[in-house]
Amino acid sequence: MKRILPLLLCLFASPALAAAPKPLLLTHVGLIDGTGSPVQRDMTIVIEGKRIAAVYPDGSQPAPKDAEVRDLNGKYVIPGLIDAHVHITGAELDIAHYKTFLHALLLGGVTGIRDMAGDDRLLQFLASQADSDAFASPDIFYVALMAGPSFFKEDVRAQDASKGEPLGFAPWMQAITAKTDIPLAVAEAKGTGATGIKLYANLPAALVRAITVEAHGQGLRVWTHATIFPATPSDAVEAGADTISHSPYLVWEAASNVPDDYKMRAMGDFEHVKPDAPQILALFDAMKKRGTILDATLLVFKNEAEHHPQRVGAGIMPWSYAVTKLAHQRGVPIDAGTDDAGFQHGKDGPDLGQMPSVHQEMALLVEHAGFTPLQAIHAATQVGAAALGQSAKRGTLTRGKRADLVVLDADPSRDIHNTTKIDFVVKNGRVHSPDNGH
Image (tube, rainbow, N blue to C red):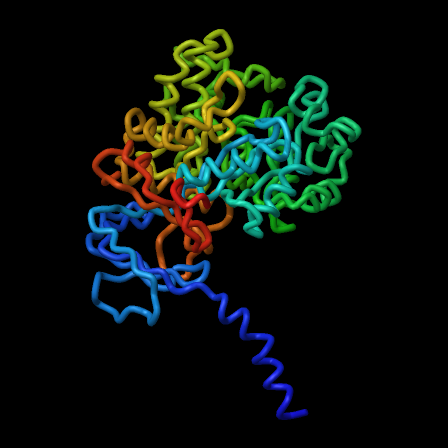
């Protein structure tokens, strides 16, 4: 038996060994690693399995044996893009459509998304399919939402996302009051597979703090609206929120009063409150000190201001651009989130004929918020990974990180719009391109 057992182990192990993919070498690339550093020319990236095994100047190390080599002379490589604020449930009519939808996101360079409130029953299924590579998709992270009871009576989106459950009592859509058992509520939220709690609306500062402390204690991140009504941006930051969303909502930090009801959230006094008001600058200093990420979401408000101006306050976009620029200048980390389904909306739903919206969000950061193209890529990669709580696994092209990257035909450090000129995408070490059907 001592002789037979090793033979059996080798026999059963051999198919897996035989099926192991060859190392993939991407050579002669212009490397943009996601940290904001300048382009590194003539670099080699070694991919083994699902990981980046090495990154080095061409020819400085021996190539692994039997490696597949792709000469990418004249091309550029960036980390896979992360859209840090999407809402994908309800974007498609049925499960079958999501396979095409998510594949289109991936081919558009998006290898990770953070869904910021929807039906977690669907999100859990889609996330598991993406994680197991059952179909080609970005990796999916999602939240469980908490808000004051009045929110659930007023907001039809929350009602749609929790159909079949008592309103305000679905584990992923919970109404919170001073009488709520916070540890239990957070545990139920975690049980959905969510990696974060989203604090949406109609919560006072005391509850924001209590939920945040408990969520962190249970290993969850906390993502909030910048103003939670009546809780202010500084209330969220002082409570320890990891990310606060929506640059326009920062206006309430310097407002004379903050409404109790979130429905006024986009109707701030953008004509009289200055983006550089002392209260807002102090907020940015606190965010920098704590590492609180600003999820600016400029694109969604640009679209609202252009198509539904009655829904937003006058002057919302110049103010939002200016305050985002100030946050950036004062060292606040800013991610790239779109607050849509990942694609711009067409007449029949997400327009898969366009590139994913995150490319437009990056362009707005460059064109209106003072970012360089490299800084915008940093926002959509390394900062996006931090927003997801995934810094150790993704977001930069460095040894040991997941092999998620985008190969481009033109230099995005010269023109941010070149992030749309995609040759192919690598996700989890697998090559995806329109030509190979993957």
